[in-house]
Image (cartoon, rainbow, N blue to C red; front, side, top):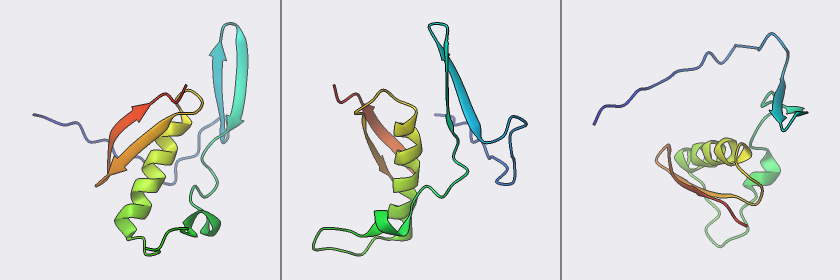
Length: 91
């Protein structure tokens, strides 16, 4: 199949600042955008026997974190090789 590949400008800052707005049922919700680091050193403290994360695994963590942020609460996501394989609602 054919794929569309989009590349974002890493220096881009939205004109409204780093706040994401969403209107649901007439109410407006606002939350901080991804201006901060998504993966912090604390998040990479692996609690399993295999404590080595490859750079590819770290990129998958970032991808899954961003994808799940924009889904319903208690969602789970599975990313591998730079692709989201699945996202599901946890409720």
